[in-house]
Image (tube, rainbow, N blue to C red):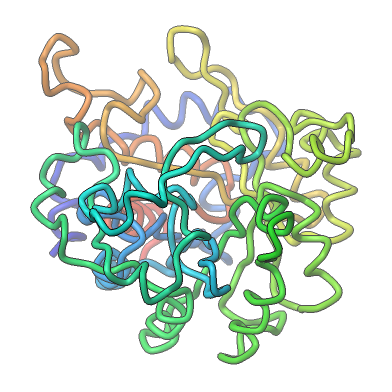
Length: 370
């Protein structure tokens, strides 16, 4: 249903816009025809997040039905060291914890990755307690329709997400979230994650799994213990928090330089950069000239999986927004995300994180065939 709707939605006639930017890339970046032998994968970013509250079994099941190749959970820990799927260890934005009087005394102010946060936190709840909460839409102003599903899902364990992926023959793409912080409070994520993956046979080079983190140290810790593919996430600015904690002077800017990519290739199998690392945007939000990051990463045998493609105008480069900017609904209206995906595919990415898997699958099918 979703693929059919997307193909008919009028987003296929995007060749001229995408081609113009591909031309700016110059030599060295692959086009769709160059990568016909290896179609890019579609990674369901926290599930079908455009249609359901994120990081819920409902969101993951819908993403699977849309044709996603991988489902992506962020991984945090409970007090009793059960790994669960949440965007953050802070709970108020994605659950109804504030409506539970029995947990009001759990609200605290903590420093997470150098930032003071006042909230309720997963590590202060047992898994059984966490299961009494219900999920809700994280960005209701942009996705008001999703609020109809508020209160219907529990917080899933990582094991439930892995089992769902295995049962449906799709891959799983977990992220260690705030690993330095969780190690500092005696709840390290890495060994528990690897044990769960090994339990389900997802610890081999050809397993349908990618493990990701913004912190290189988390990946380095896991490298000797697993043959599964590891992906270094690269933010648009700043530096990994483990670098901050260890006083390492390097930043994310350093990691995308040739010497940084060579270092990453010593333990990682790919990178997950912000899309602006591939095609920068200027101060007005318009796209600039593509960088050489894809080419440079491929030269170091690193896959490139940029994040995150979201269909709403609010999240798209100005070049791909549609409609009247003065409309009160402009930010939540869907823009030409098909054009944005087409550009990234033509530049040679190996996969994309996407909140609407059907959109990405339909675009891929249009470019590469079935």
